[in-house]
Length: 478
Ligand SMILES: *[C@@H]1O[C@H](CO)[C@@H](O)[C@H](O)[C@H]1NC(C)=O
Ligand SMILES: *[C@@H]1O[C@H](CO)[C@@H](O)[C@H](O)[C@H]1NC(C)=O
Ligand SMILES: *[C@@H]1O[C@H](CO)[C@@H](O)[C@H](O)[C@H]1NC(C)=O
Ligand SMILES: *[C@@H]1O[C@H](CO)[C@@H](O)[C@H](O)[C@H]1NC(C)=O
Image (tube, rainbow, N blue to C red):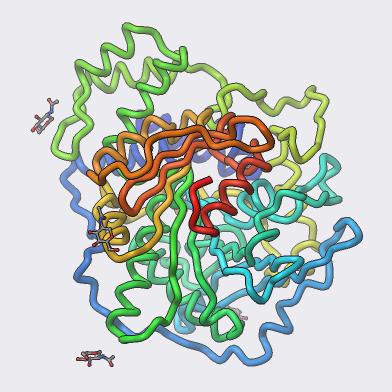
């Protein structure tokens, strides 16, 4: 099993830009396997705790860098771009030569009043620019010719200034001159993201007091609450609102290992992917709690479940796979399953990298090396989420309901473990006369589903995604 898993990583390294989002690359499954084998070998990893000590972060000179980061235009961009875009590097460790890459898409209108929203993709090891900005919620999508772009009219920068951060170093265009930095994990990722933000706000001081939100999906279910907690702690220690954090939104988020497993196999069964026998085998042989041991019998049933699933789009179970023979229909509302390939080609064009102020690199959607070396990943971040809820942070959990990777069942089981009380009972929310999804309000927590959306919610249901995101920023239930 371990060999098969390593092989799959190597396979993906060879064809990395073809892997994430529909062609079988599954970084989350890999990290779960790594964590599980560490636990069975009794390797205890450190965890971000609430007693984290404050050490002042590195702040470098930022004068003049904002102007240099301004993008004049991206190759193949459609005419009529009516908003400002910036991208470049922020050094987070000058001694190691470690720098994180960002892309900022400001709003076409009301930019100076709209909030600042940070978006993070997961993996671990996957790019927030290539996936988040170019495939999901950013202003442009790459066309099937891999050289021109289309405007995404449902982009989230319509209602916010959206900052995409490639994190940690080694992901996307982010890098370090010290190769040992590529052995990293949750704690370092949170610290570097924090240092990035403090420096970035020096470069863009007009955002310093702006309402700030953090959103992300999948393994960013770890990154987002951990970074949010670090922000709150540092604000508290400094007696100052260094970063004006208001809320977080977690999409199809991996927040707890037990519910990830239980929710996954229940989703498989309730969505007619596995047989009764396999499901019952899992129920009666698997103990997915932190103290539980994974028996051979459990392993065997899990493998049977993955085999039974066969070759479907794990991230959006009812959509087609990317196939060389498919007649792609590249439109914003009908997601093209080969999009990831177009993005991989586009972001490796030298002129594109130049226009982004990126170092010339072989850009990949996900970095399998970083994933394979991942050092720390707590079993659950639910206590971190509880801490944020208790400290007045607006917490939303949202879920595209056709994702099998971190399915809606998993999110509901996680919320159950948070032990918060019901405030607004479950109801359908409407968009353009149709049910956009369902919503339920709890004390200090909102849960929203997006109907007919997979793991990458804004890719599959762009209009509904923008509707729910606008509600989130407005602080109202949809
Ligand atoms: C990494 O090394 C290159 C080459 O020496 C240098 O130009 C660059 O500034 C370094 N990066 C950082 C973040 O210090
Ligand atoms: C913050 O306030 C507390 C209590 O007023 C004080 O003890 C502490 O020194 C202050 N910290 C800073 C960094 O000013
Ligand atoms: C799972 O294992 C733990 C630790 O051995 C045990 O306390 C718990 O009762 C088990 N759960 C079930 C449902 O068997
Ligand atoms: C909700 O937030 C308030 C403070 O804003 C806090 O006192 C309360 O304990 C929180 N409740 C839950 C369940 O998080």
